Amino acid sequence: MLKILVYNSWLVFTKHRLLQDSWFRMKHRTRLEREQREDEEIKQMNKQTAEDRVRLSMIEAKLSNPPSGEDAEFEDLDALKGERDEILEKISQRESRISDINKRRSVTLAIVAN
Image (cartoon, rainbow, N blue to C red; front, top):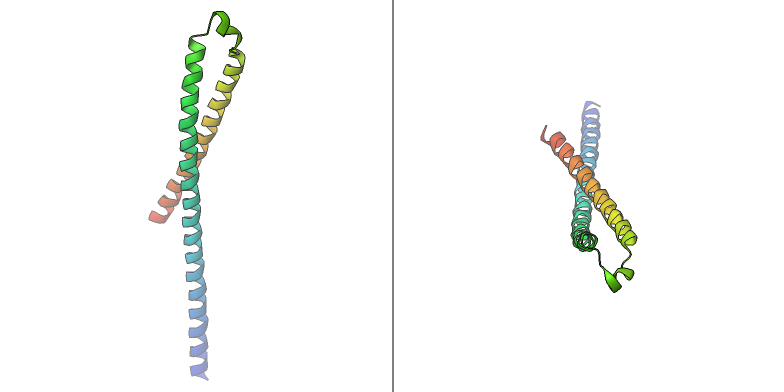
C-alpha cells in the first residue's frame, strides 16, 4: 500500500512539474513570437517614418519658398499645411507605439532579471 502511495505521489508531482514546465515554455514561446512581430512592426514603422520625413522636408521647402507668378495658382498652400500636419501626426503616433513597445520590453527584462 505504501509503495502505491509513493508511486502515485511521484506521478502527481511529475505530472504537475511537466504541466508547469509546459506552461513556462508556452509563455516564453509566446513572448518570443510577440517580440518578433513587434520587431517587424518597428522595422516597417521606421521605414514609413523615413519616407514621411523625406516628404515632410519637401513640403517644408515648398512652404518656406512659396511660388510666385503663374506657379502660385498651381500650389495649394493650405493643402500642403494640412498634409504636413497629417504627416507629423502619423510620425508622432508611430514614435509613441515604438516607445510603448520598448517600455514594455524593458519592464519584461527587469522582471526576468530579478
